[in-house]
Length: 490
Ligand SMILES: [Zn+2]
Image 1 (tube, rainbow, N blue to C red):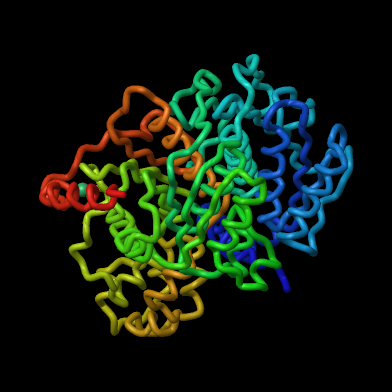
Image 2 (cartoon, rainbow, N blue to C red):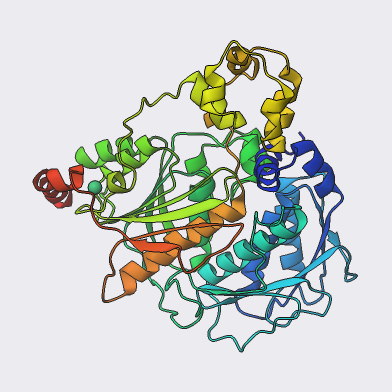
């Protein structure tokens, strides 16, 4: 079976405004060389995440084995082969292509490097120096270092146009405090509150992978209705080609990974949030204190909110290229997920015209002139991906394009651009918020955080949210409290 790189290529091609075939050719000719300082705390863990992230791109990877023990090398080799058996990592100390490094003492050949510091990351381009690290890196620091270093590699090798990204010469960031002072706060959770993870997709697997390396213990219910499929291998943070061939339920994959180290008590529930709610109300499932949400539709978020947990932390990715990521902190007293995602006022099923507009960028007013034929001038202002899509249909009436392009709501829903390193940054914000809100004495207002992984974390990314007037969480407060009291009763 050939590894399916389609969704990552879709994300990359959209971000770089090029064709997927052109990008594939470019990446197949790209080599990334990795060096690391495994003696630095959390670097070895970051290396396992980084190698997985890089192997999810159709590039050549070489790894300098200096300082790595045989077990680590075997683990890294296996991770890479599990994702693409046709592209083993090459072991060599000779740098070639783009050299990158994990640890605070990069060799002169390294173009980009990153080091975990506490829960956060310090990242540097060649020429920018590191301060002394403030703290030992944690699992969250490992995840943040691997995810942001992958983002810088992505920006460097994808051929993004200027203006479509921000090259970070240095990044200092802590996903717990949201400050540029990683390592300043190192409080961690020794035992997690009872958790439910709803959604085991790109964000859900990244959340699980972060929990796994956090070194904490706890009970967790994992909820998802789907099975693991071939395109997931290159976009999720967990799972491999064998899991895809076996069509393993996503909840079973997460249960396997989270129980491997013996720290988690995992209950897999193959279903949706409503099945968890039914189980709680019938008395055979425990009501979780905290819900971590990685679902990908507004309806699923509304359903997740109806668990009415003390705290709901929703991580998401999206945007035109799939590189935008966000965290929504939701409370049963508001702001709730319905405050963040108000119910749609437009029909839930988009029209053929809307789909054509979303997929191609043709304006709705142009699409309205359905009888007139598609001409070159229609294509000129569009991104190259849209031009490539529409070019074969020049001379045909616009009204028939939806059928010709086989656009349907399910077709576009199932084919979103996606990349593990974007979901991992969303997951880092989720786990950062979990640490902040379960260990901090003063609880801050609910935060909405959003940024584009092509630009990185920035000062404008966070805003405090208040409940939306008229939202169910405000008008039905008495009912919600009644439900919460009943679910809390032994
Ligand atoms: Zn609300």
